[in-house]
Image 1 (cartoon, rainbow, N blue to C red):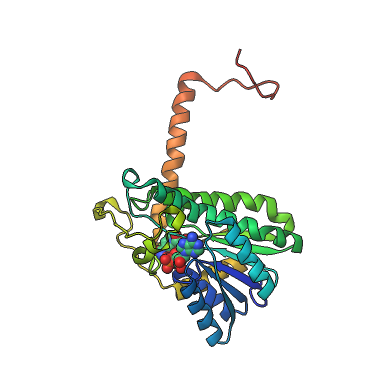
Image 2 (cartoon, rainbow, N blue to C red):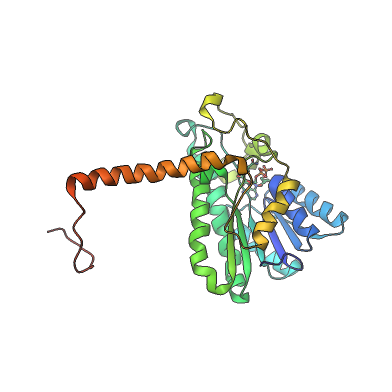
Length: 298
Ligand SMILES: NC(=O)c1ccc[n+]([C@@H]2O[C@H](COP(=O)([O-])OP(=O)(O)OC[C@H]3O[C@@H](n4cnc5c(N)ncnc54)[C@H](O)[C@@H]3O)[C@@H](O)[C@H]2O)c1
């Protein structure tokens, strides 16, 4: 079990949407919360609303793309709230533009904020968790990472979100003996301001705030036109329940089970069709008798 009550938590992207829901629910369950966001006003608004409700929260301004900004954020949190046991690496942004139409800046930004933001935040807080012998990192990935055929016009986004899942799963191999756990949260559809506000999050080094031009795609291109959107306040207890139980994944759309099965079954079948056909024609590849690495090919 990972206890929430009495712990110190950081929520990146805590100034709105899913992060806001997580920050409020963490405080409601008795954690002290640092609401970290690139938008200082929103971070302060959410922290103030938590304090007004009787919780313990501070606001910290931080761009998760910048390692130095994360280090400064960590210093501030440690000074004001003490060591951090719970990290919710949640800040993210989307694109809604086809890959051919994306600028280099946008590709870099989407990868930096979604993938490197989680990497940077994790690397900043992990050593203290290991030293203390406990902690939990919950990274907000996406259904678009778990099911990369789910939504069009999200190529760097899907890559980054799939990368988060790989990061969390592989990291877990290093952490068992330290009692530090990871959870990949894969939202499907949560009603937030992401679509409308997205361009306003683009940091100066990637060109600064921009107007989002959303690509139009027909509903026949999408597999999720029937998705219900949930509220952050209703999703947050589900995510914290998974964290409390040290679950490696939390997925908020059970109704996507069929698509999930089809996606992974098709990957398995595609791999096996290919290798079965190859082996039928060529036989098994020859085993390397020594197991040694072959540097040159004879
Ligand atoms: N809403 C959904 O349906 C959905 C689906 C799948 C995944 N997600 C993921 O959930 C997470 C939260 O998104 P949301 O839907 O709540 O959107 P949101 O736009 O409401 O919240 C995103 C927050 O991240 C902050 N942020 C953006 N760039 C930042 C940066 N460089 N540094 C620090 N903070 C930054 C924004 O200021 C904002 O407060 C994202 O990682 C997103 O990819 C959301």
